[in-house]
Structure formats: structure tokens, C-alpha cells
Image (cartoon, rainbow, N blue to C red; front, side):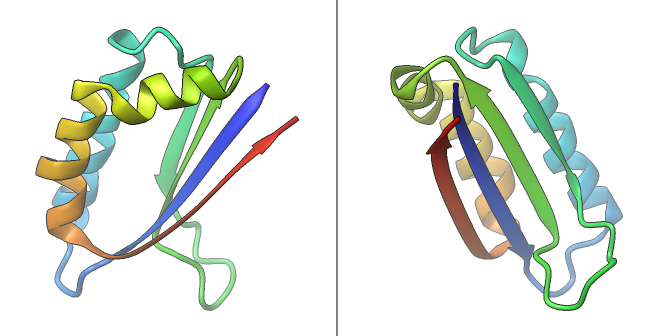
Length: 97
């Protein structure tokens, strides 16, 4: 299995409706990107200082599945139109399990 984790910090002024729009857009991706084996995302629980605001965890069979997701037009549309306009910072990691 291959796992991708992305964490986002939102721009000042990003509200609950903005975060809901991100979640809705991300929630549509598993239906159109068959390489996704498991897809989880959500806002931080605010249990520790310094955490990012939102995380995405995507699981694939292999690195080719990740690349198909990363380059998929639906994923790129969500990044460009929904996430990046609200984004202040992003960090990510990919690893094999």
C-alpha cells in the first residue's frame, strides 16, 4: 500500500462554509478516481497547538495509483478552484506501508 498525507493551513478569514466546500469537493473524488483505495479527510480536532487546520489521507495500491490521483483532472480542479484560493500553507508526505 502507498499512503499520501496532506495537511493544510487556511488563510485568515476562511470560515466553516469554506471548509465545508473543500470537504464536499474532496468527497466527490473517490467516485471518479478509481485508484483511491481509502480516502479520509477532515478538519483538525484542535487538541494540540500548532497543528494544521485540515488533513487528507489517501491510500493507493502503489506509487502509480498515487501519480494517477495527483495528475487526475478532477483532483487538479479541486486543488486549483477550491483548495488553493483558501490556502496559506501546505505540507505533505508519501510513504509505503
